[in-house]
Image (tube, rainbow, N blue to C red; front, side, top):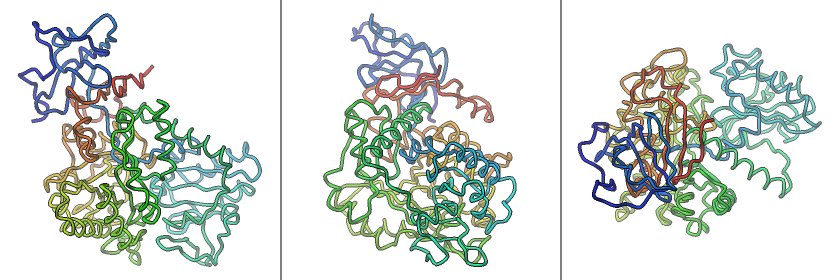
Length: 560
């Protein structure tokens, strides 16, 4: 078992007869859970430079304390490897803090009121943006509504002169007011773009709801180059601060442009990036083809930047009925969702990935999206039998057909999932899929692990708060806010959940040799928690807080 007290000292511990060099940092008197089978548990850690040099009892580590050693007595608190955010949107986390935060809105009326407040301080014509609304989480549907979504007239009344664009929590739909649609030239005659839908009312007028690629129809005026750069830097700074405050030491960014990667690299060079970034490129085949070889980067800046993956999106989200299904939606029988990027295009991406040594990471939520993606992967693997252990990934893998679950393990495909999506989505999943499909293939962590697949964890921030503790709780409880447990047989144990958020995440990025567990020689990426989430009663887990976040031996966050 993973967390059985060790009977032997780990390599790197000093015996009484050994003389060791003083460490730079020592954490002592804790319950250290290493996520290492060779020594699952200890009391103290010694760090020199950015690496762990020893793990053992407090007595074992005492010889590493010298006059200049910083000693942190954690007083019995839980010490674990730094959390690996397995799938998030780094710039989205920062940008969300510059816009209206709609995540906790309980009704459309609350959102309209928030926009009205923002209008009071906005310049005439200034665009107002927000993110985080989800119609399934409102206490009642808006009136009037089309498919449960509001119409833009309510926003027009409070913001007649300011364009308003509000992004769905999933990021797979937007809602625009009349001024924003007018500024973008969007009318009743605007056709649906490929992979998107302009929702219209019974008279054929746009309601304001834009599904998937239709969100791209909204055109906000460009900033000056100087203003854009300042905004982009601020976004990265805010995201870094937010991630570190939540105990995230490595962040797997699910899709950035080459320009954003250039800025990330510059900020790493400046020492302005505390969290470690592992980035998926998302520019499209034509733009990527000539640049992938140049941009491939492993462990740059003492492990603060890696670029070795490509992101694609084959379908949308379940909440907005954009997930691509094998059978129609139970609550919209005329629709099977949306294929947002063609299969042929992703096949070409697979060829580029193989040729340039990149992992391919495909967003797939619906069961058809997952099947098509697995087919693409299998074709690429068979065409390149000399390429082994590619660790290609399906991002989300939320709703699977029973026949496709074993294929993850058989093909060695990583299931990059988000535990907190399960509990957020649980109230409406049966309505969308029906009970049979929900039980068979919705968030089936145990079934995937039994297939031999590695399941990594994350939040998809800013879709959800970039808070691993909330994600961990969701993964072990599968309990939604109403207290109902969503198919309890698929819950992870606490040890499995911790591994999904640490070692598994590192493995999913080819980084398990340098992070993901606490072992001499690995980066000193460590989190100290106020409560022992492996032992306390389950419902107390969400109250645990990050006390310290340590990246490369440096304390990057300390709770006041």
